[in-house]
Length: 169
Image 1 (cartoon, rainbow, N blue to C red):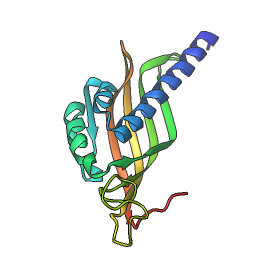
Image 2 (cartoon, rainbow, N blue to C red):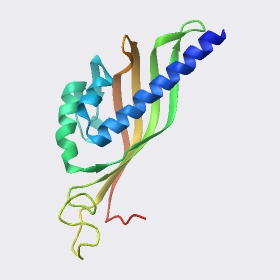
Image 3 (cartoon, rainbow, N blue to C red):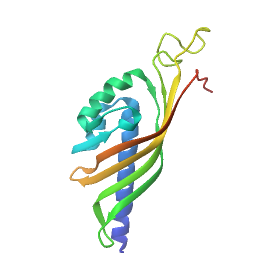
Image 4 (cartoon, helix red, strand yellow):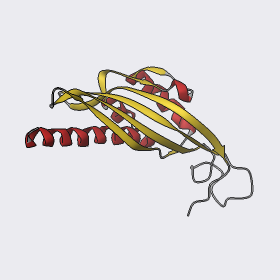
């Protein structure tokens, strides 16, 4: 392999990592235009194992935009990324797969610091619980004229829990 091919592979890996990070940021920030832009024109998302829908990315973005209203505070983390680039005889191809674990803590409407009526320290009444889930994403990406894009993402939720109020540091 030449240095040029090695550099190309490194650049592909960095670009793909930026797409995966952009995905987490778009979902957490509710940036649904940005979310849709991360996908190929025929891109799809599958959230069925997490109680959601499967379909074209634009339709799933619409569903997410409504569903995430229940969770005004979101901060999910995508970690342990395993990236496999298509290998064309020592040269990188135009396809990639990423397996990555996630942990997704979210604050339900009305929880402390969620902008609801029950803010931290606002009394002794009950608060909405936090919702946390974890699992693994399976991303399939394609190189396009606009750079790497998600062709398909599938969520494989492994666990979820509700917890009482959170007290931050």
